[in-house]
Amino acid sequence: MQISGSSALVVGGTGGLGAATARRLHAAGAKVVVADVADDKGKELENELGIRYVHTDATSEESVGAAIEQAQALGPLRISVDAHGGPASGGRLVGKDGKPLPLEGFRTTIEFYLTSVFNVLRLSAAAIAEAEPLAEGGRGVIVNTASIAAYEGQVGQLPYAAAKGGVVGMTLVAARDLAPLGIRVVTVAPGTFNTPAYGAAADRLEAHWSTQVPHPKRMGRSAEYAQLVQAIIDNDYLNGEVIRLDGALRFPPK
Image (cartoon, rainbow, N blue to C red; front, top):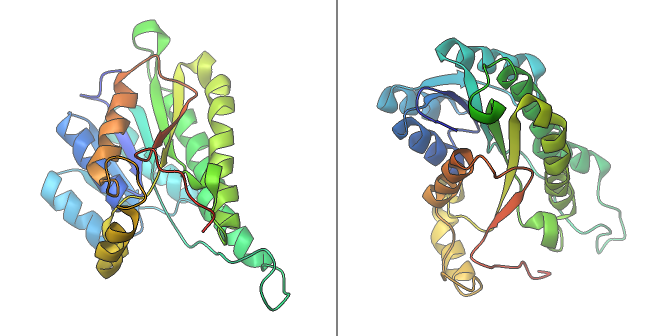
């Protein structure tokens, strides 16, 4: 699929993975809309690159819909990338005090890391379906973000692992659902990535994970995530797949 001239929505586009993706798609000629809640960072990207930033709550149908309208105003929407984050709860299923993991924290994590991904997926798909078909009937591609925690969630990660497992589980079904419309769906499952979100802890985390990633012995870089997203968009035969991007890392129990 041709990136140049297409409109692209990047949800969570002010974060490490999202911002790198917005930069790469912009450089490839896409008309990019960054949808997020970090207004200062969003405005910085808007001023730097000349893209459009829209304050967007991924959990809200109206908010995501407004961002999609902004993207469609720039051109036919053919690309949707979701890399947004949010609050996540954790803890052992039964704590040392004998109390079960709170239900509310689980619900909140599912809301931000699964339900809102579904929200963006469904609304983006409906909008991409309005575009004119290209070669072989293709209209566009949707890229979601899971985590290797979907496969090897660590102790205390049950809500997050459940949410990311849900994103993995939606991938093939969504691809099958959207095939008649010429829309592909692919999910990236990153391992440990060194993003600005870690702040001062980034060096400490880099030192920790560099000994555990088989090769290369370091955390992932946002540009590598963005590079994979572009490869997914470019390759029309890549569909219904979850791609691990983790340097062959497999999370240990702790």
